[in-house]
Length: 329
Image 1 (cartoon, rainbow, N blue to C red):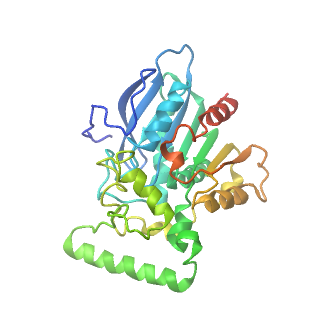
Image 2: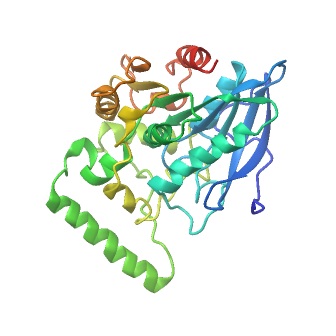
C-alpha cells in the first residue's frame, strides 16, 4: 500500500543528534493512501512496552526542525516518538506538492496513531500527540475525533482556520475581506489550471524589510538563518502553493474541542503575537464542557512565538514530560 519514498539517511536536522536515543527513518500511510515519512526516536534501553508520542509542526516546517527536536527530547525522557512530515510536504508523499487540508492533515495525525498502535514495543493504550504552531490546532482537532489519543500538547498554537478566514489579530474578520481573498484564490486556480503549474506563495519574507512586524522578524530569525533553516522547509524557501491553504477559511477545525475527554496541555509564550489564539482555544475547549478538569493552559513569561520552536531553556520539557507520564498510564 505504501509508495517507496527517497529518504535521506544522513543526519540533516537543525539540532544536534542525541547519543542517548536510537534513531531511524520509518514510513506509514494514511487513509487516503498517502505515504508519510517520519523520524523515529526511542530510548536506548527499556524493559517494558513504551508510551508513544507523535509530533508534527510548525505549519510549513519539516520534521528536521522543531518537531524533531521535541521528539528527540521526549525520547530521551523515556518515550518512543515519531516526528513526521505532513502529506504533500518534506519527504512525505502526495501530489501535487505543497498543499494543506484540514481533513487530510487531521488524518495524518490519526495515521501516525495507527502506526504507533501496532508497534510491538509500544503500549497502544498509552499514545499521545504534540502539535506545534499550526499543528497545535490540528492536534486539538485530532484529539476531538480520535479516542485512542490519551493526552495532547498544543505548543505555541495557531488556529489555521481562524487566521485563514480572519487574518492576523482578526483584522480582516468581515465578509468583504473574505470575498477579496476568495477572488484572489479562485483567480489563481484558473491560472494554475491554465499553466499546469501551482504558483507558490513565498515563505518567510527575504530580505527582511526594516518595518516588518516583530513576529515576522521572529520567523526570519528562525527560518532564514542557521538557527532553523532547512532546504525542505516551506517557510524557509518558497512557501505553500497560493491556493494550498484555501480550504481552511471555510472549515472551523476547533468546533468540537469542548467534547475532548482526554487530557490537554496548551502552552504559549506570553509575548507571542499568537497567544490570543491559545487563550481563546482553551476558553472554547473548557467553557460549556463536561471535561474541563484535565485541561491546562500554561503561559511562559516573556516568551515569543518562535521561542517554543527550539529554545530548550524556554520550552517546558519537564512539564511536558510530567503531563504525559501522568496521563499515559
